[in-house]
Image 1 (cartoon, rainbow, N blue to C red):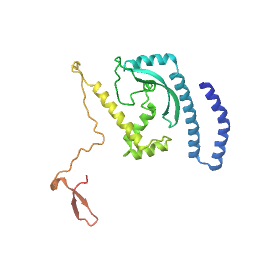
Image 2 (cartoon, rainbow, N blue to C red):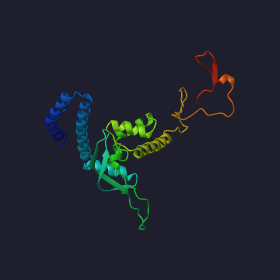
Image 3 (spheres, rainbow, N blue to C red):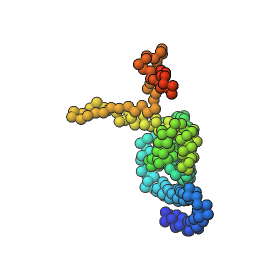
Image 4 (cartoon, one colour):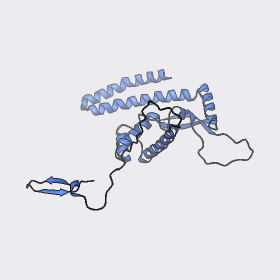
Length: 241
């Protein structure tokens, strides 16, 4: 199937390249040229990823391994369900994914539980976080950390062809943060480690936590700074927070 996709893409690009080249020679807009080529490559990448995911998730051997993996978590295979996932290049694709639900209790009495107890175990094994690919999750988290707000992060991602609303971006960050907290507990020391002869470094990353706190009362003279004005006179003022 990938060979067919590549051949179809090559046939399509024979005409598309001529159109892109003519547009570039007419307007001399290299930015538009970059956007057009990147868009075509994104379409190709999404088609290849969809084909590979469809082949793997529909493989009987892979499904048998998933049954064992899900069984350890008390899940059983129910059916294949259509699901839409978002890739790192911002493209959304629809695939059939094996869906697992909670195994039925052995007792005859029915037990009621919360809805949404199922899972797409195949996607989980491949690193998907909900309906988001691992590459997109990494880009979204890094962008949200580097930007001053979720709104700014959303704007940066849109410029790269990735459309995520603020609510989704916030949910991804909060969910990933909770997952990291659980992982941090798993990596904690048990107390049985032999650290003799080794240097153990413990650090805490405060990120953007505000460490300086305002103190009540007037500031001491030695804590004030002098500002020189053009007239030659000096004025003392408190340092800005």
